Length: 66
Image (cartoon, rainbow, N blue to C red; front, top):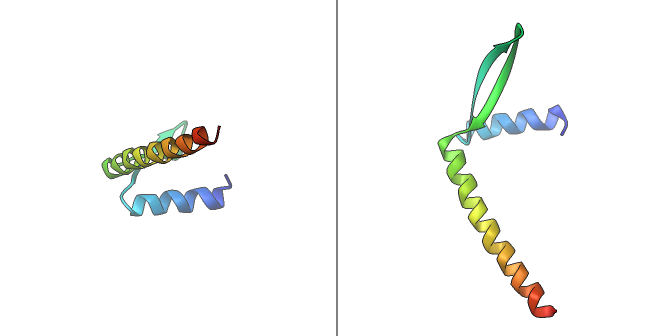
């Protein structure tokens, strides 16, 4: 992924409260670290459930056609 795509996306997710970030210094160089916020974890878990339901539905349709 190009930096011009990745970092605006990370900032947008942070503004939405889905990510948190912090600056850390490693080897005299500052780096920004991102992690899922509590809301981000909740949204992820919800999306995983939705994905599984969709995936199971598609599997059922495909099995019917066999």
